[in-house]
Image (cartoon, rainbow, N blue to C red):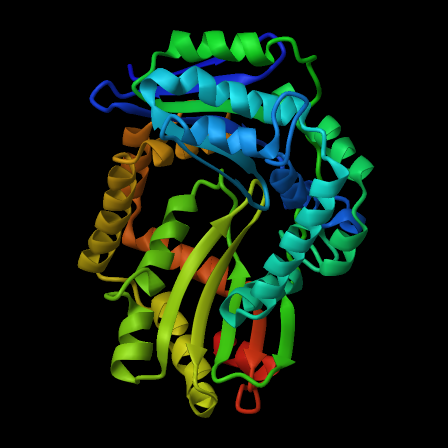
Length: 420
């Protein structure tokens, strides 16, 4: 068995995937906390904490943190999502303890120096500005807020400039104290390491932390609707979405396959119909985003303002077709092969392995079983795709549009097309 997991007495979980044929290890700490756990008044705190973790501890300066890793040839990074935050390192196998020592120091002893806090405010505000200047990113923030209005799940991961400008050190430290606790943490490692070795490090560095209760957060409340923002841009950017399914839903893999069939590559229906046949866009794709208790099915397209009037009708026609006519067996098989290859090729990356198994353990409280996942993908039938299409595309749509929008149909017209 290459994958093993152990729970420490305080509730912190340790999972390893041993691969003796490589010289490296990817490891880090994944936290079961993200943007949706925030108080709306402090939107952006999860991401700001992630930034500040790199800005000095009681034992290391900000330069020391990265220098200790890079001096042994390692690479260090982190990310914040709507439900998770992760800090991870990829380096040679003999330096695994050093990697966990540095991350442990960051998560337990960061001091959030005032001068670093002020500097990081500016960095994050610039990051927000970059998003606002990137319409194909900004339109997804507008979409998310429209789908989940008034909820942290709908708020931007980066926060807003005004909130970041006013964020206090005490808010950051309070957030860490509340959420960076053992039952919310998973130490994940993949590569040339033994489970016992990582377990020993984890016990030494995290075993003293007191036990805690699991994180609570409000249930997702998908509402849908529309947000239009006329802007002087070269292209019009549109996201049309629907309520999807949550991560534990029995038809989760049917939703993934539906997305792949519709907009998962150059052979997908949307790409072939919208781009190749009609020449309406440069970019069009679909995705299914699943959360612990809800999900979304999104279709993105960017087009010239003069072609906008044709775009939505063509997309809606494709949605109607997949509801009304079962997909061909060959089409389903092609989508299953795409997902299967994506999963298996991801296994060639130690970072991908560490990330997948950490998030799987957080979501399902069990070790990831790749073969079991592949079997679930293969078990999806044509009838499952039809049922999932009917379920998803009959939900209230969410529309977000940014750019010149004069030729974009009304929300009511789009609803009418989808109901036809």
